[in-house]
Picture (cartoon, rainbow, N blue to C red):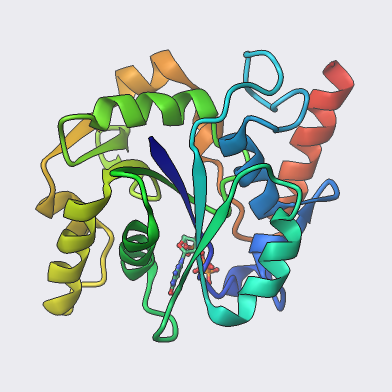
Amino acid sequence: MTTGAILAGGRSTRFGDADKAVAPIAGTPMIRRVADRLAGTDDPVPPGADRASGGDPVVDELVVNCRPGQREAIADALAAVPLSVRWALDEAPDPGPLAGIRNACRAATDPYAVVVACDMPFVDPGFLAHLREAAAGAEAAVPRLDGRWYQTTQAAYATEPAAVACDRALGRGDRKVLALVDRLDEVVVDDAAIRSLTTDRTFTNVNTRSDRDDAERAVAAALDAA
Ligand SMILES: Nc1nc2c(ncn2[C@@H]2O[C@H](COP(=O)(O)OP(=O)(O)OP(=O)(O)O)[C@@H](O)[C@H]2O)c(=O)[nH]1
């Protein structure tokens, strides 16, 4: 049993005066694209993926972490996703992604959660399933790109130890998501494993309007090629 936790509480400052979580990419809200990949109901041809369309759900529930004011628009965007949604609302304003992960882990009903940022519309469900398996028996499975960059916002966590680790870090005034990696007994999914399981596209994140344009072109190219 695994929860899919989507982090959406950021201010999207680089995106301009709109919440990127619900901004459409080729007509589909960004967070819906992430949720569809978790639910196994994604686009017929996932850009960059060489697997067949759709698939089994990777998770059995969704937790969405966001600010209270985002909830209505996100609920609309997710209305047709065939998974129940639990809400992990940030109580304090702008607590940062570490608090977002903590709040999401606390709201999850499953012992493990795969955490994905709402701005990763091409997240590879097969890779998430691998992360979940790799985390079993440990406290987390975290991809590390190029031997350097931990991808803490596309990772699997044991929810209770992760929430405790976040609380400890936040209690010491440390808001960096890397604090989580320092405090957990995690499996590191290294470059070689990442390359054998998926492509960099899974980590593509959309921060600016230009990133959104690139994402729309990728969706169009994949549909053309289909
Ligand atoms: N819950 C919560 N999530 C956050 C917060 N800040 C960032 N996030 C999430 O963390 C992930 C990565 O953050 P960024 O890519 O920097 O997103 P952002 O903060 O909205 O964007 P910028 O304002 O342009 O930096 C996204 O999924 C955000 O929604 C926060 O204060 N609370």
